[in-house]
Image (tube, rainbow, N blue to C red; front, side, top):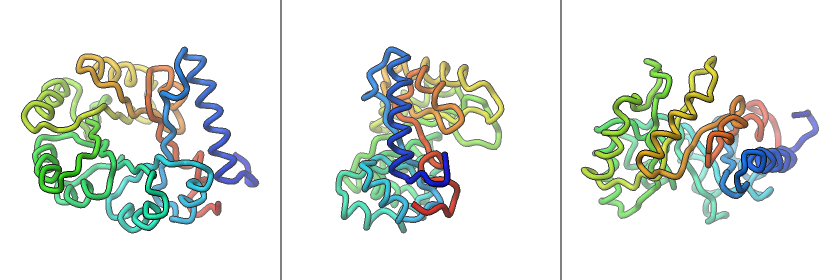
Length: 227
């Protein structure tokens, strides 16, 4: 990334790189989506990405997304917004109304609340179950040993629209075993969408079957960088 690159330049370069990586892995580039993670970046930067053709975005916090995206969505109805940060149960009502997908379903209480809100609002965002593949105490996510039972419970007991899995490997670990584990859990349950891979490890994630990579700084630059 250089100081003269625009958001449009970065998006174009990343799309080309993702396509090359997918082809090298024997995959159709169309099966890997680029998610622009816009946390801490202003609406003006998101608007620049939208002008460059980007439509899939990720936000970490419900409150930040609620202040940023309604006006942008009014101008771009095809915009798709994913929640990729931890979700408190008391924010579930707003999250169901605002997001097209929630990627951080990780506990029975949240599953119960989301099921109630989906029914009440008659709105069904795609749901990803977050798996804490590194079993890190400070991170959210269902533990791998509990993932199979939790996936079944979400589908069978709460009738939730679970479409895939998400993970964030430990920062200093080789990400490959974590991505392989997530892929195997997904395979057991016939789940086809894998949200895995960020700036430091998205190349590996694509090799292991990621269907959406979550990139922020690589698109928007450091916080406060102009479009």
